[in-house]
Length: 159
Length: 205
Figure 1 (cartoon, helix red, strand yellow):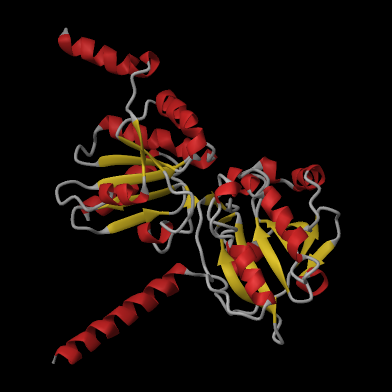
Figure 2 (tube, one colour; figure 1 turned 135 degrees about the vertical axis):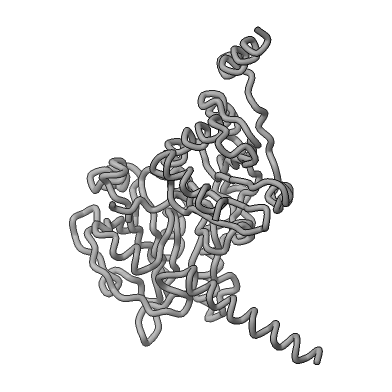
């Protein structure tokens, strides 16, 4: 019964307005969050509410997380929306029932992009997988479906 | 011994860096001479560097209609053309996006936007996406400042228009303006490459 109640709360959480909190971070703060974790791999997705291919691929991430196929994997979402659009980001988080580390980056310029990945142009969506051994793998184009995302993660994690 | 070791480290670093850059960039680099193009403008006339590039250079901008980051810069791109066309550095805007993927970026919609915003510069369509690939453009908006030399138009700057997309009032570095001003004064461009958040170019499948 208790379990059922919890399940109910979780499934209605978005409708109730209970959602994971969005945190606005500076680039140095983001860098700390992206440091290699020797225990758990991290999957970081850079997106924005205005970016159609980003919003289209987000459900694949959410579904992959819900299925918990990779319980150790940490999901980090970094919105690159304008700071004046924080409300739009919050709305999208609620609408899609996103969970994980929900961040919005406060960095108006692009000097930080090379620090994340020299091969990244700054175009979004962009997804980065950081393995416990420090190895980094990037996806520069949106994922076409959930299978493509899982494939990207699994190939790197289990190799 | 210490010297030898550090030399070894240096050699490894050099190899690593060169591997990295060769993997990173396809397309033009700073100093490269650009091959001319001929693309259709919103007025249906063909535009090329030979005919429409400036007497001193050209500000080539890959941009589009739909991308909010491109939209945020519309007025600033117009301002660049107003500032530099008469000085020999006109703007040429190129839309490289596949209109099948993004109907907003169709030629008809380019004509509409150019009219609505009163674009004082050519806004041309890269239908085959061959020019975007030739340049190595990856996102919109992305700027290539070209300067005219005896070889042709050479790349002098690649990157963002400035360092604040959201708020033009809070810009600290007007990268393109600074680059063109330096070139006009015969000085070296101090910041030759920058990056910015933008929309991916929507490639044809």
